[in-house]
Amino acid sequence: MTPPSNIRRIGVLTGGGDCPGLNAVIRAVTKTAILQHGIEVAGIEDGFQGLIDDRIHPMTAKDVAGILVRGGTILGSNNRCNPRRHHVGDDHEGRPVFRDVTDQCVEVAHRHRLDALIVIGGDGTMAAASGLMDKGLNVIGVPKTIDNDIVGTEISFGFLTAVNTATEALDKLHSTADSHHRVMVCELMGRNAGWITLTAGLASGSDVILLPEIPVEMESVAQYINARMCKGPGFAIVAVAEGARLRGGEQIVAHTVAHSPEPTRLGGIGQHVAAAIGRMCGVETRTTVLGHIQRGGTPIPADRILATHFGYHAIQTLMHGGRNRMVVRQNNIFSDVDLLCAAGKQRLVPLDHPLIAAGRAIGISFGDGVPHTHYPEPKPAVVV
Ligand code: F6P
Image 1 (cartoon, rainbow, N blue to C red):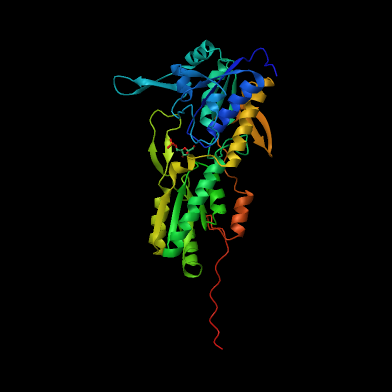
Image 2 (image 1 turned 90 degrees about the vertical axis):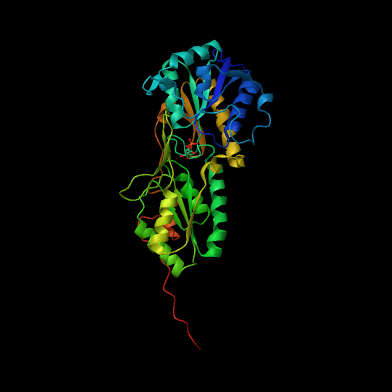
């Protein structure tokens, strides 16, 4: 197929945190552009930072051979860079100085004769891209995040691999919980959204699932754990999202990242919940924080396929004349939406989500005191 006369060369970049499947998208974008449409592809290094610094190199189909299964991103990424508010140094009193460098980015893109950018990233990356769109660059977005919280798409690539990793970890914690009659608490990623914890919690048969969307009542959790320890199997697995918080309390912030468009890094609720369970139930409790393991490693097959489909669809969208669109999947069908519909927003777990209802039905506690299945009082032994 001959490319429309206005698309001869495109740039591709990965923004935000790394995520399983990034390389699979880069591969699909590059191969579809070159092999199907005869368009040249340029790789932009380290997200928008590479556009600011003019670190851009040509990519061939050979450059992306073999990367489908690799974790991370061959282009490098950056979750601190927003061209509209770029940190250029500190003033003489040590205060950070920010500058709008969108003109510089557009100039670099023009110098490399880039007719469009394929931007693979999350809500923050889409928001950062808006500055370039305002200056006339055509940006096609591909939704990336393990958190699965991008508005406009029912799924982002990387999520299913993170769920797989989290499920395996929770499965493994069962061994110690069972053998030592302990409560094992596992803190999972996801920022303000509980998708990873809800899905991995259910997949692993966790007993308590604590989500950012449902404020936690420790009395309710303690009551549930006591029942499981005394009348149930005598151990418990608690899956807690890093963004979960106690009712009336705040999320726990692990640290902040200076000059980042999204500076807050959550973490610590796992320790907090474990300590409270130990205190309130008098039971040995341990915490595991799974952290970046959820973002690493090879994407599972479902993510390789999703990422490939998204990458292919991004080029198709461009070739059909799309401008400033984000490719999405809705009701299992691939399409595209206005790129800005995702910018700076989050898709949280709705409280009436069917998985929450199913979890409650099978006796899982969501830590909110909603009645759940209780263990029956043991019947007195019948002596014959
Ligand atoms: O958005 C992906 C994510 O892994 C979140 O789940 C987590 O809160 C955050 O990024 C961690 O960011 P960083 O890699 O900067 O510590």
